[in-house]
Image 1 (cartoon, helix red, strand yellow):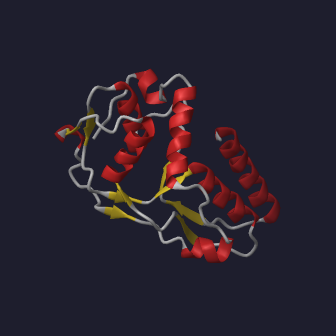
Image 2: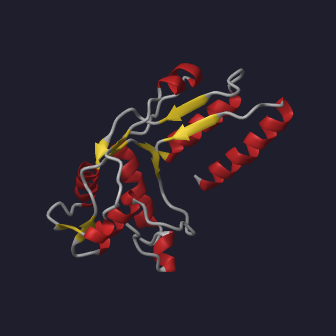
Image 3: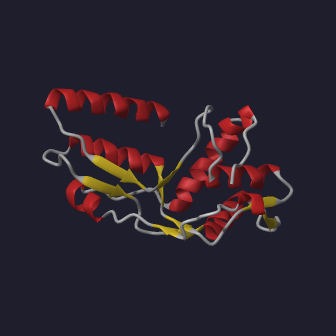
Length: 184
């Protein structure tokens, strides 16, 4: 996937130079994915996967917030489509699913997929954000209309792929290698 992202960046520069394109703005909602080995911060989904597999108790912050998560491959496909679409210069296009999930629901899905549904969950005050946005949702109607794009990866399938990648790659995220801790 990261090779695909690198190729996308190079391709984007090529298209921009050779077609004299003006820039467009693609606003991606919360993206989840397999993390690179040099990833700097633990994000919610990878951190919950790690804790479900490695910790006796799961420590969380606010599980009542809702986010619109899009799997990384869907986001990359939208970016490629935007690069290949004519006459969209200057457009601001939101990428997302138009569906939110509470963090509690996401954690429940991860726990079920890993088969640790009975594992205790504890609210850790150090993980609470002082000013947390309750709901983030992307209106992808422009992406659907202009690009003909909608995400194709179900949330559950994206979670499954992410868990499988983590398990197949030594059960270690980049931030674990560097000893970085959850910052919220």
